[in-house]
Length: 313
Image (cartoon, rainbow, N blue to C red; front, top):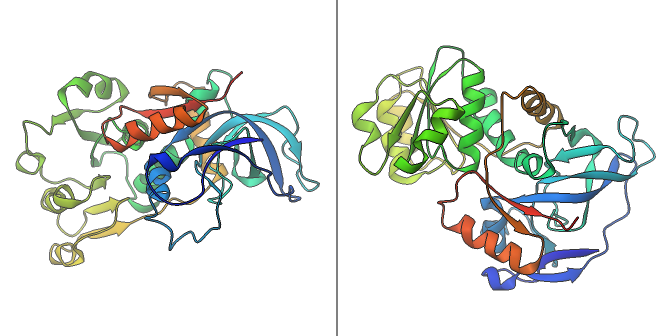
């Protein structure tokens, strides 16, 4: 099958098209013919070699860890899924990623694509949606009526986080540039702060949960807006200053996504009822050039919503 791979770490120029043979299907796995995948920052961070100690894989490496498509083969032990099912997933992180015509997924990681959701909209969800859900609820313990600050609300993770927090009955505050304010209010944000003109740390207090997708000075300033003793800061980019958290007696936690088919199905059910949508900012064709252009956009950190790669029909 055709895949876009890297054969060494480096810039976008390392992306090439190559024929790859997948390993044999295990008894609890399915083979999915891909209709769409999406791009996340982990893709190009791994491509550049930042994660090579965590994932010490031989080359070639197929990047990409989101898939939406149709099951074409099932392992001998699979009982809940059949050939022809329309599914999406965040597969396990292996060197056989999803920038490919086909991919292998463990049956426990699959969720059903709702009838009202396209392959492109489904492919946008798994990594970003699960990250948002786990950060807010598994780690942040966000409750109805609490105030949550979601940084970079217009990004891939942020757009899902706003909707999931709103569905849970939280009061949702987010940061974004002026041009994205209308979109984020439609998604459910109660307040949108323009980070170009306003320092959030000067206008916010008594926040229960901060969801940090930025790190750096933004993270440092976030400690000052949290409720002392009960405030929680959940980050997907690491905690830079553990002492600062201790000083204010605030729970500060850096998280790494856990693959989870049940939680993905929860998001699918919300999408089926129209309570959560995917904001797909750009769609690129599945080719070396398409993936290259998608990485270039992702690396700007200014993409709105998710960047999706669509396979040929």
